[in-house]
Length: 214
Image (tube, rainbow, N blue to C red):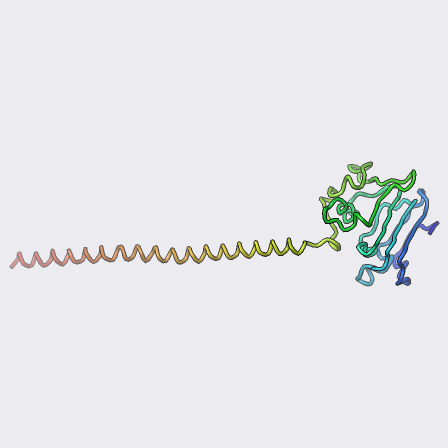
């Protein structure tokens, strides 16, 4: 596709079986892509059928997270005049250097020809740096809330730790309650015989006084 400046809202909604998108433009040509260009927002489901998605020779700097289901794509190549390495691209760039990366093998940001780059053009603190250099540093390491979920093992591990902590606290509470009652009983039984002895001594002394008076 050439002489294209925008993919507007629902631009491809009438092409439900579209599998390949290739844009060849000009480094002087800015392309805007609406996140609902394939109807993902309208339908409430990420468009799943794109297998190849290439954008070459353009001034595209931001790729919408919800544009398609990027996990289903076999090949994505982005080679433009530079990328905005800000929160809008954190979902992708922060994923690249992770051990459990979802996109590093299928989505490539490259320097396809002279005049194109795989570097950041914004914000100022990242300008001129390779995209992979800033992976994990954008927007406090923010990841996609669509594609990244806590792993099952991690969630299970956390659940068991919370469960064990709850059982431990409950056990301590029950033990403290029982032990506290035993202490009270011990003190009580220790004092009762002493009180009985004191009363017996008083009775004995009283009887002796009576005998003396007789």
